[in-house]
Length: 520
Image 1 (cartoon, helix red, strand yellow):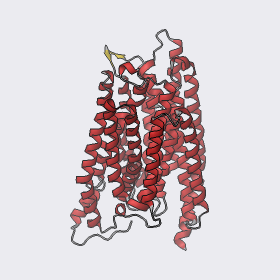
Image 2 (cartoon, rainbow, N blue to C red):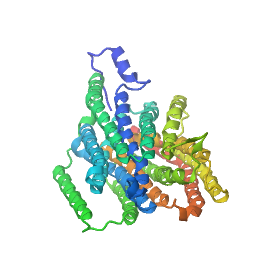
Image 3 (tube, rainbow, N blue to C red):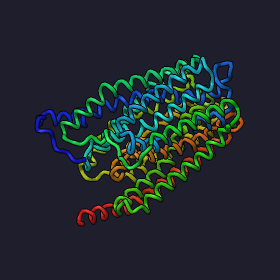
Image 4 (cartoon, one colour):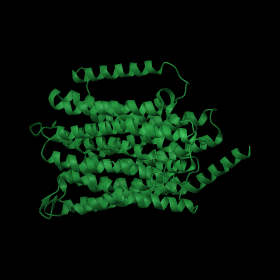
């Protein structure tokens, strides 16, 4: 991103704009709060979904079995991140990042409103609301990450640190959401809990409209840069018609399923979605590797992105056990009586964001200090470290699940979950913000939204795989839990070793390729 500072802006003001938010560009602050409240809205419904769907009809739920509820959650969460791929493409080629984020915010808000009103108008409106959240998030997620990445020039050592701070906003929202909706869940006030998420999305929308947009415009004008987030490519025509046609087909499918004319098997859909997403991601990269439009360095950058996306998929397939198997484990097989107080099971979902808030600033400082000394680990090494930490967390869950089978009460100590979630959080901090940063840093010009979308596709596959395993946490399958957690541990360790072996040769290849391009 080239820049030529506006001569009318003083050096003092430029310095304030460049480091006005905890040493980072000032626009990071409103983007931080926009993302925080959007994530508050999502994490308000995330821990409720599976528990709500398995709750009996008499207690206000749908009365689904664990496998079906987990599969539906996996379809929702997987589709939410999968939607980031076409969402990123639409932002790059049609709407531009800013307009895509704005319309995505509105659609998400409508989704939350539909879920809250489903208490009156029935189950169909509930699922329509989930679909709106998926569609809106597809536009929102890639755009705000690309905007954050656009604040940093190439080679700025603050980039990973900035994304780590941005990640804190996500987790403040998640922490507040879990604490609040946990109270409503214990009282059986499901739709009030869902409605709280809608209020959070409304706050996010207002912050973006009246603060973030203004600050971003001022920043771009003062720095004399072209605001990348306002423009889109003009390579394709009639995109609006294709979008309208897709929405028409989606509405028709909803009507057919709701009327019973089109059967819907959640488990089968979740399974085939996993295959389709994997095929799409592999196919996309295969096409990009053979296209003459990209040079050798760009293709090598894409190879690194591809490897990181594979690693990310395996990490999230373990990490996203939290809303499924971990959530059910806490609700059914954990001793929730702590010093005479009955802890709401959903409150365990607040531990991950709480740990991130405590640890993210420390991790951010560590990356900056290592970067300033020129010894910061590569993205692949950070990914491998994250996976090894997550593997250690699942090692604790292996012990916890075995303790259930051997003790008289059939309940595990809550400390097992606390320790496991602490290790998973450390793994997340080593991997997720670095993954977001790497996609914006490595993506070829004009493909930032698409790369970010593909990274979120790895979260989609991870959620679907996690949901498949999560459905096994029921009374008749409890003996299989140690095997489940052992499987996740082995996958993580093997992938970490592969990444460590590839890290140095890949980095050397990229460095030589970039030097060759510079020389030519």
